[in-house]
Length: 286
Image (tube, rainbow, N blue to C red; front, side, top):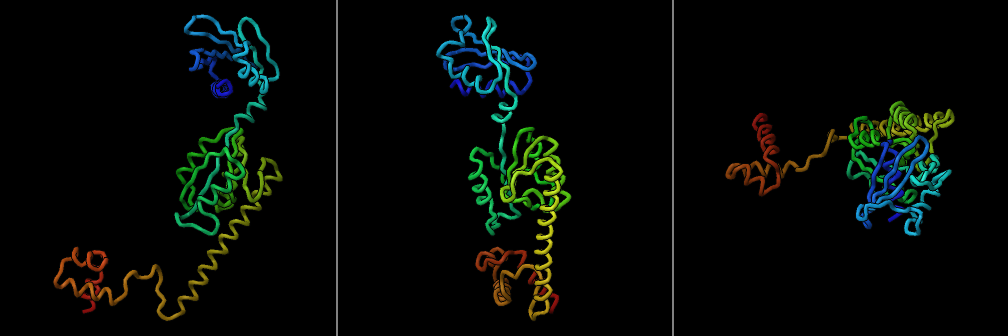
């Protein structure tokens, strides 16, 4: 309970309020924290007895020891404990980790599904908050990613399994990472390493994103090339293959002569819109 109080006091301390009051609900004790430039002054008050609480007693040993671990100086006066926080240690303890997982479609596989990305991140950072999104990387207005970017603060770390989870365009990717660098946010790409806000780090980032974009363009080119070859074959049709063959459509149209659209749809599974299009096409041919 006392270590939870340390965390709660620190969280309120970062909000830069002049005075913070926190209640120890087990004992109805009010912990008051006053901020004085580089340090805080902490004292206790018992609302039941209407008296000050001696935080130096054995009962509060864990609370005080918790602050000793994150302070450069701590001493007791009549006002309470005067604590000079070690800002480097405090920031490290308060650091938050966010894992971002993204796929273009719900069914994406190739060792890159949302579940696989999540597990890979959690294996490295067990205390990570995971944000998952199904959205194409070619679009910048990704709702969950946009919200995440707004919530990231200095000292936080953003983790992705691969660089192309952030973006698939070199210019866009560099812009995102540089924006994070400017906020003091670290970016850890698991299959690469920690990207730092240095000249070498930025050069490494540019190179990686350029390679990722080149790979993506290569895949698109191969797909288009394969499509061009397929077009040379007899019977090629662009787009998705028809769900129903000609015989099934002809049978459904025959049933329409004695049944309603709804009845034929229930019998054959062919939608009303498909039947209407097929009937219109047949009439045009006649």
